[in-house]
Length: 336
Image (cartoon, rainbow, N blue to C red):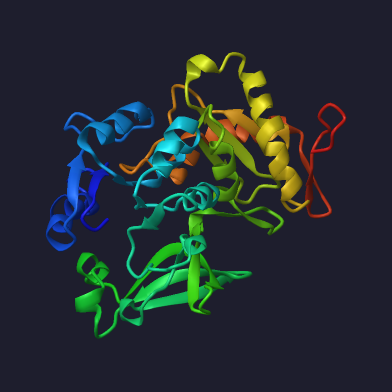
């Protein structure tokens, strides 16, 4: 982004918004283009407006939470626009790996997190942590590690987290990574989501909710997805439509998503973790998913809001547990 005219969708009150509206101009010569004061990040943010702002201001790069990149992916013209940008930078949450893999083939894609430089485009989702940051990884599951940040003698210079939490000697990020190496045999860490994305079923099988959520959210009629099932026999899925006026018959809407997306997930995933059709439901239009300012879904809040809906789903599902695996009813003669 050095010397580039860049649109930032980050609000000025965010640390990242402040950094890219002021600091970046001084240190890397970036010219910042900001959203109009009456335009905020919302689930219904107009893609065309964003593209028009870039066109009329000459912005050739964009900095945004991953929500916007993933939203653009569902529209061919909007995603082509992102591919044409000089740089695409995201922050605040993890980016869907499938979306990022495709985008990285066409533009310079990178996150706002220190020590991420690599000359290998395929490594866009991996990180190299320098020792001064005080990082430490603890094994959680097979090849999955949780990141901790420990206070060191250099923390006052390099680790701003201890300014925010001066009483702590260790910060548990609850972020998950797996190790890899780049083409130069340098050890790097691939982001695998957050610890609260890791769901453990009643019979101890584990799966990453975000992997399923990301795949379903790529459907053009889907705004957001929450997958859960902690302590249950099988997972559940709640789908929030992008436009309720386009839903039509709710059962048929869910059927179409199940047949085109979820069925494929079932085919790829471990036989023990498959999602029955009866465990998939639409959200309640009177209970929109709660989001952070960066438009990430507040999973625990949504689970709390939908507790009665989820309990009813399990009571009515008719699913059962057999030999450690979930057994679904057949759907039109196809075992899913």
